[in-house]
Length: 258
Image (tube, rainbow, N blue to C red; front, side, top):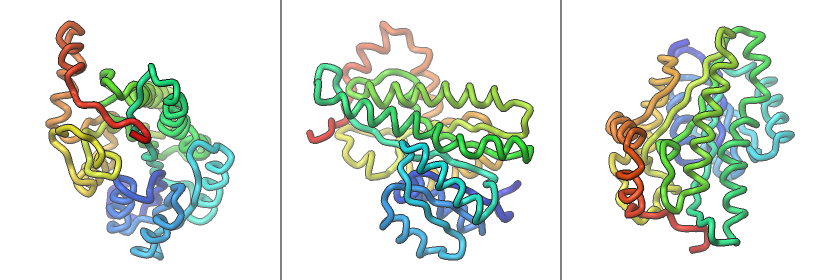
């Protein structure tokens, strides 16, 4: 189904940043959009922009029961979605040597990895039975190599990339597409605290347009923008004796409370 036709979309992490930008992108094309996020007030503010097209569910992606209930409510209201976008994610600077960062590690993995599985799980059987659907996971170029101070985030995004690949292979031939999208830097509240240079940074609206185009083409794997795709390929192939000293000098994301 091409963008512009009446589609049904579900997006997690939709209360702000990239998720809200993706929601606006599809709503502008007339889609029926289900919004899932923890921050109910922000969801309601977004929904006021297109009240006839948005349906809201306040839920935490870490809570599988709540996510299943949200999926049931949205499916009852607008049918089994054509596209589910697992966008909810968190980036927190972490240090293994800091005992107090244990919870930060848990939060990052539970939201970024388990939360993605909880997002997709309620829809897979229905999409398979129907014979079509698209599951989109927002990963990151940070999943290509380990970054200093980002052990939890880099590891979680590497796990997301592998998880989506496994899911894509599992669903091969079912009519259900699985798309992995690895953005570079995007202007959001999450990146606003980064104390280092962020090359090729995009606005959330620009990223949302690129993501919608990738989904329309059913491209199974993409890095955006294209400049970051080049960087990601280089990162992937650099030998450790070159990568390690270069990465060690890179900026580090602030830890929670620091």
